[in-house]
Amino acid sequence: MQNETSGEDFLIYGSVYKEPIGLDNPALIHLKTEAITKRYISQFHQFNCDVYLQVESGVGVLLVSTTSNTDDVQEFAMNRYIHLKPNVNFAVVSTTQKLSYELIADQSYILTAIDMSRPYEFSTVIPRIEIWKIMGHYYRIRTPNYTFKGESHDFFELTYVDSGELCTEVDGTLYTLKDKDLIIYGPGQFHTQYTDDTHYASYITILFDMHNVIPMEQSVWYEGLINRVFHYDQKINTLIKAFVRESTTGIPYMNSLMLSLLTEIIIRLLQGIYATPTIQTTNVAHQSAMDELFDRIIDYIDQNICEPLTIPQICDHFSLSRSALQLMFKKHVDQSPKKYINDRKLEYSCQLLLDGHSTISEISLQLGYNSIHYFSKAFNMKYHMSPSKFIKEHAKLND
Image (tube, rainbow, N blue to C red; front, side):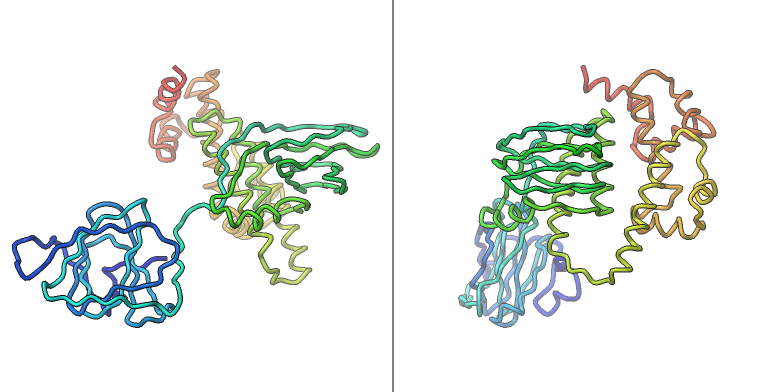
């Protein structure tokens, strides 16, 4: 995280001030300056006098140090008027396309360029990969002895086996996908899919276009994604279920959320490649079992979302203590079970409202709310609008 110039860490280099410095002091010079986005910075500026930096447009970061050692560089967000002490080494980097600022110093200043011990790499928060289009998403159920002879295309294809067993051959190599396994076909990869005579397969297919933002890193992420089977991962499983659920809501910005969920799936897969296992096999097996139990609980809630679900009922159904259930939800979704159930009810209410087959009162009752007043209040707290306004806003979008 970047530091704030208003914090104590900055006092060694300078301070901040509230009002801009005017042009009425003849002892000071005002220089209009622009900074651009850079990845590597190799040189500091150093003045022998006090320096003032006043941002006029854009967003930037101030790199400061009292030495020329690159390891001593600290980053501070340029969100205030900044005063730098004499002889402080500094450089300004824009995090927008361009940063315009005014540099103010004494008329008798001496400016020195200080070479850093080695170039400093400034990491802006930009995506390394970008998914900009989903061409298709399907849920397929295949019986035993199904055969797809194969194809190749110029986009990515993700196949996630929800249940059963699916065989696939990719560029001459055979892979077997079992429950909760996942594979990604890259552009130009010829692949087949089939089931044997004893297994069926139900699976999700997502076709999407993805490219790298930083070209030199393509080999790193691309080679990590293809020609391998990704086995069960609770986070990935949850994200895919969320993707499927969102694809059917019809709620505004649904498509944007689907793109975000798919992007997170890919990023989580990439992170998993470089993660170092730190727990024992027995702990892994136990955690896998607990993850699967959590998924069953989530499925149970979804299947009974219109019932008056209670925490004791869930605990009794899965033979869990209340505290164990609370800890499980805290770990996986950082919510209490009650909050999660309420959110799911409200999410489902959006679908019911858009279907138009029931009145708001009927939906309130169907989802087990004590009154339409309580339902409307809960809906407004989550979506910042009433159920009736939600219906009207969606109708406008479809006009």
